Image 1 (cartoon, rainbow, N blue to C red):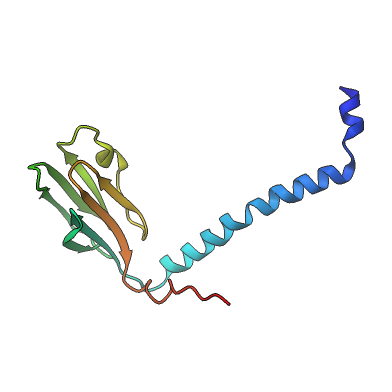
Image 2 (cartoon, rainbow, N blue to C red):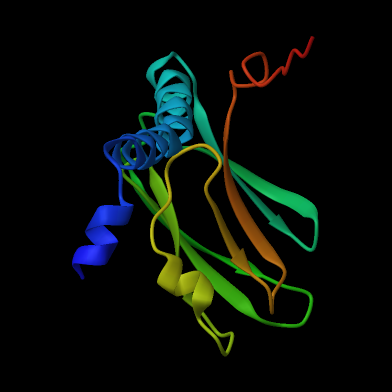
Length: 138
């Protein structure tokens, strides 16, 4: 064991520690950018689509009411969707895997719920994020 300690030099520890710290920089940058998007005057909207066709838009920002409704797919299946307190979820579904139900509530831009057997997609979009999403490269 002592032979291993003799192989490690002080600069090795400094380099490894520096690399570990540098690996967290992307996490902090993306967290900061996401926080900037959600702090503004943006309006979060849930877009519900079945088989690629948008069927409903629900404004989540400042939504304090509770609403429950069913979405029917072309194969005869259903998804019960619940909207409450600025968030949305699939409360029940008659699909076999129940992944969409287990996803739970979503409320932030970019989050999605997908029910593959029924081809139902719920995604949260920000109405003012279009100008923020422009990527400028030099």
